Length: 357
Image (cartoon, rainbow, N blue to C red):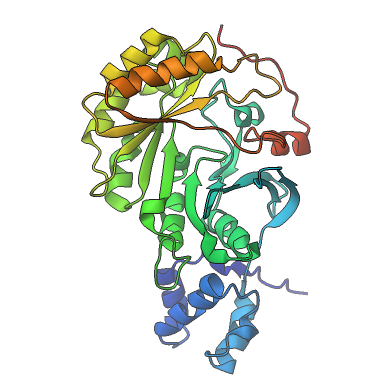
């Protein structure tokens, strides 16, 4: 008995692919726009709901496609309103997304990979290693699904690719997903100026991102000398500070925007006043802003958060040098706040102590 062909998730289809598929069946290209508006704007879960499309097409589509949703295996809600989602993918692997309430909107932090290959010493995700890239549809679904469950879907205005994985290492799917997320016609209609991609410093892809998208760039720096950064972030051995900062100097952001440099403050590692002065000097040629992030302790790492006075002194030095700088306070501290924590527990990873020695 022949097996039924596997149906494809329509979230994996770009507009161009869907137009080509329809053309093969002598169906007009404008039908692709109608279908995608139902999927992304109206959040349809069934093709028979697409009432401005002929019955014949509505009958044909479910023979070949499904409209996928992620399986929310666990959701943790913080006292401050932050929500952390553990999603189970079709192959049984897990990713995390975090919804963060702001004063009048929500920011969603999403993943691009299952695990991560960068092996940054301070990052919990690294303990589980790298398993695979997320597909275009799996990236989009994090935004689509969480937007759908909000009382006011339009209140989700900001997206940060700062969850599990290195976004620029999954470049093709990242850019394809960004296209849908920022599509103001038939996509999810988020403004590109409110979408940020954070990278550990995959230098060859920086210029590509500036060319192919209009989103914001954030660079995870975390040290002011190569020895320290290489210990914290092995990618620095391939792309040391000199190469990374030169690529940032050459980067062409959208008009009126600046690169954000993220700097995790770790007690006794990178939080001295001399570090702050070196940072100010390193970034002087680059139009940028700086996010200082107090280290978020988690099981399996012996790093510690600096004292408030130390962080304030670091801030003051940068502020005095006329940088736009903020100390970014983590939300969701009463739940599994460290990225990768829910996945680690679900997979039964062992937390061995990691340090910078």
